[in-house]
Length: 421
Image 1 (cartoon, rainbow, N blue to C red):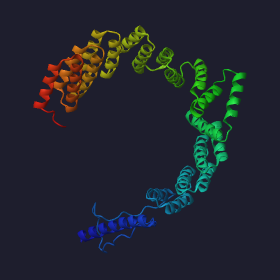
Image 2: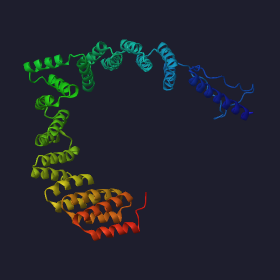
Image 3: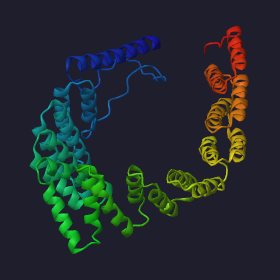
Image 4: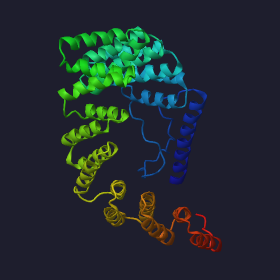
């Protein structure tokens, strides 16, 4: 008898799941009430655990059940049924916070259907329910994007202007400003905005907000870095520890090949950065001074980077390159040894070794390069590394005119071809 009850329960579960699958494919909605359970015989008994009988249906409260169904319909592209379920979720829901979420979901379904006017209408309803400024800024941002999609530039402008005026988070405000300025550019109003900002700065050169806004327009909208650079320079004097401004300045100086100025800005970034990041920036300072032709300064900063403690193998490679460019081969060899100690896996050792060998070969340290190439050929377990080391060693011998060594390597390769991975 128990086996019969378990079988009937299992069949009922399968039928319900099959009905849900068919409804999704046909664009129909499954009734929220579960299917009828198989009726047990009149005899009273205690139902064993795992008997396969479906649990009693829980009462459906609010709109969450319908919202979940709408999510499934949306996922499978059954937008008509998704709209029906979301409208039901909104009708059943009493919690204003959840209701705004359902309005947003319904707006997204309409947007996916290409009905942007209806999509905007749902966000406007969400705005009527929203209580906090943060919520309103969020929904006005969404409304601005929908209006842009609908080519309603005036509606989009109003939405973004609300966010710019009321946003409490700087990132949200700057993003809305950027969208707004691009709309001004499309409508031919941007030059008037720039002129107004410049007038504000004539009256008050220390107006930080005007400087930030002008810099953002010139750099990200107009895309005129040569006009944006002096604005960022003024900003950096007002905010000497602002990492965003300093990094932007570094970018401009490198783009203009003003490497010494870039190094100076990196030094300011070091002063403002956490201690864990200083070694990273020391290397950048050294590289900038090297590009500026100030080798002594470059080496000083490179060695300062090493003084911060153990570095990664790749850091040793970059600093060794600096040493070799300044005829400090012995120091470069020492860094190669440190890089080998810092490499945790054999594959990393062989990869780093190839990089060091290339550096030595490029900087007239052929003997050391030959030694390392031979080491990789002998020890590497990755066939690609062995092949690269052999090819580069042959190229090195060719430059030196060592034909007998080339013939010996070629002969070895023919006798024992490199196995494929």
